[in-house]
Each structure stands twice: as structure tokens, then as C-alpha cells.
Image 1 (cartoon, rainbow, N blue to C red):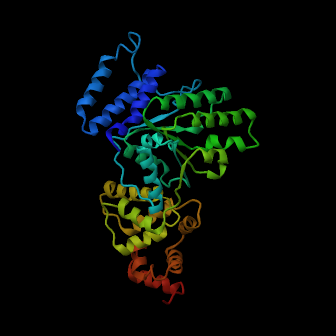
Image 2 (cartoon, one colour):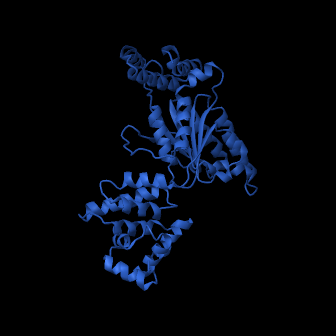
Image 3 (spheres, rainbow, N blue to C red):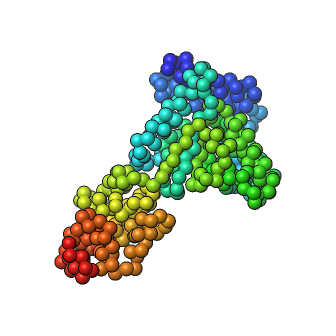
Length: 385
């Protein structure tokens, strides 16, 4: 991409804002362009743009007016409709996805970075990604990753919070949300997307709510072809076909595979070190867990390491894993069924689950008992292997 095309999107946004007398849009995109030029090595032009902003600070508005970045709020409750996430100070561990998921993410980000070139060829269109899957599978984390990689601010709209008790105010909230995001270079993340998207096809809802959904879709359509929109839902079955069509990219984030769970345990459990066979058992026992669940287990174990001043053992991890293993899903119920049971019952259940993986020595480490006790328990339970 040559220099003339690289910043054309920002230039067009600045010109568009000037033509419609949208000073907020002009200033926000000018500042964004200055930052991009600075990173690209053109500090001279970047400084000139910043100086122009400073010089016109009091000329572009009436005397005494300030350029305050005030988040839109609900007109009745005064609660913010949108949340700004500070990404510069955010220090998260590397994102773990399957290769085909990375393919979708990387293609989406490539389009987001090159939409000026695509528009020149009349093949631009909206840059939108819908993420769906169970809670805790990384949708919000992926939104933060994409925003940080694109170097853009992240604004999160909790759509259930947009629905006012005064139905007439809900459409106004939606309009205020999109108006705010359209004036600045950002990634707009529509979290809990099904809260609004489901309403149009729900026969139990009133006509006013259906009009709200249509208003939302209209605002989504008019947001701008170069605007970057992410949406997330835990209930993709509630979204109708009109909603699906608004998103050119879609990615399913389900419970991690065995391979991904192994990477997660290795990443999250640090600085605690376990043997390879110990981690194999944790990978097996966390089947059906989300990445967020595994991270929370490791976080709690590491807290114990610090607050209790001792190096956690495998049996400590297993105990926490059992507590967090309560929930839906066959494998999570397996761990839930272990709670309150005696050691003999647990040992027999684990041996029945995988005889090779849960050897006498492995059971001793996992359950915090001696090898002799482990051998006696499995013999008592009728296991002669």
C-alpha cells in the first residue's frame, strides 16, 4: 500500500466531518491521523497536525466551549450507554485459538487495515465480525485483542442496558450510541447482542420493541462502510436471519479442544511447575471447561501460593477444579459428582474413566494420598489391574 492510500480513510473522514460541520469527528480523526503518521515515521507532519489542533482549540467553537469526550447516557437513568476500555495499560497473556479461528481473525484484521484500498475498488462494505458461543470462551478477550492490534480505541455497548423502561427512549439510546461511535476512530463492540436482536422474532414482545429492533438494524446499516463493528452473543439461536446478514465475518468460540486446553494449562498455571503427566490429567479433567474456567482455576491456585506461602500440589489444583466444575456439560457434571464423595469412590471413578492415565502413582498425586493407600483403595474397589 503506497503512502497516498495508506491514510486515505482518515483523510476522507476528516473531510466528511468538515463538510457536515461535525467538529468532533474532524478533531478525533485528525488526532488519530497524527498518531498514525508518527508511528509511520513522519513526525514532521504529525507535529504539524497536532499544532493545528492546538491552535484551533478555541476557534472551532464558541468561546468557553471545551472538547469534552462525554460518554452518552440514558436520558432517564443517566447510566452510561457505552464503556471505554483502556487498552494501552492492558497486559493480557497471548490469545489461544484454533488455527481455523486464527484464519478468520487474521483475514478480518487484514480487511480492517486495508479498507481504503478495497473501497477504491468498490469492494469495501462494512467491516463486521459476529462472535458466538458459550460464556467464558474468549469473546470479550478477542474483541480487546483485535482493537489493540488495530491500534484503535475500544468502546463496549452492553445492549441489555440500552433497553430503557421508557420504551420510547430505547431508540434514542441506540441512536446516541451510534452517533457517538461514528465521530471517532474506534472499534464498537456490541456485547450481549441477543438482548436486542432476539426481540423482533419473539411473538411475546410488543410491537414497540419490534420497532426498536428495526431501528437498531437501521442504525447498524448506516454506521458507515469503514466502521469496525464487533458483536458477541451466548445465544446465537435467538438471532434472526436479518441480524446474521449484517455481519460479513462470523466466528464460533466453543469450549477448547484437548490441544488448546494443554496450551492454556501450560500458560495460566505458571510460575507453578508440574510434571507432564500431571498436566495430562488436568487437561483430561477440564474437558468441557471454558478457557475462562481454566484461567480462574490457575488464578485461585496461584493466590493460595502467595497467601498461604506454600507451593501448591496437584491435589490442591484438583480440589479447586472440582469446585469450579459445577455447571452444565457432561464432563463438568462428572467433576461435580465427585464433590462430597469419599476417596475410594473418586479413585474408582477415575480408574474407570481412564485406567492408563490414572495409575496408582497418578492417583496418589492427584488425591494427595500415599501410593500404598492408592493401591489399597483400588484393590478394595475391585480393581485388580
